[in-house]
Length: 297
Image (tube, rainbow, N blue to C red; front, side, top):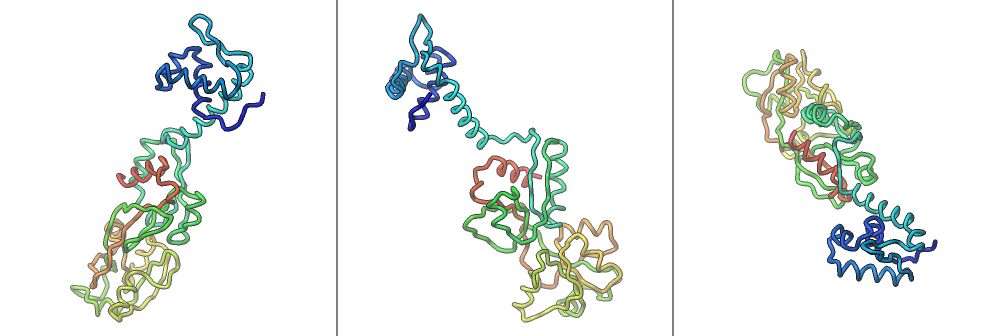
């Protein structure tokens, strides 16, 4: 049967509930309406569809033949609408699903505590880590190729279409071989006398340390460039190379490799590990759940 267009969806929902309850009172209770408001809404729907729709017989409102004819179509439609609205406002972490996070090798390492808790508390959630090939892939975020970016920055950022949250802040330190020939405190002069390992996650020309040195009209000697924070410490073992690296990882790897940690001989901006997502997902319950769990991990 043909159903007129431009019908108030509230009237369709009333029809759906009344068709199931056969009671104006019960329908009004379910829809949080007064019985009077419910009766007036039913009258508007009758006028719009040009049929009585429901006829009172005793204490029941029985559907007319026309109502029976359109019931399946209307009820399915309103159920689909309610399901769509519900799916956009509810995130169940106990359901089987996959979350996609773009990371560098270092930021994926930082997520190990989060992953440990996830495996115990939410075993149905699977995580896909994707290589973060550029610092902030706006298009991929917009197209939901992944849910979240776990990256880092050194300064305050403002984006037109990307939201972000600081997870934690840390400083850089210098690591080197215990047999390195410099003695006592690592001065800036000594620091610049030796060759360095430089980490460039996105193959950039220089890192934050080089930017800082350039402001002092200084430049260091580069021996090795690598995109990997996790493998870089192995290059200072039994060499005279120096490496500036996040303190959090330096303290961890110093327990496993023959390396020593020294303060940097100049002030370098702290780095901030941050979570990024597209602004179109600011109210996405999945994003809210994920960022909260990571931040608390």
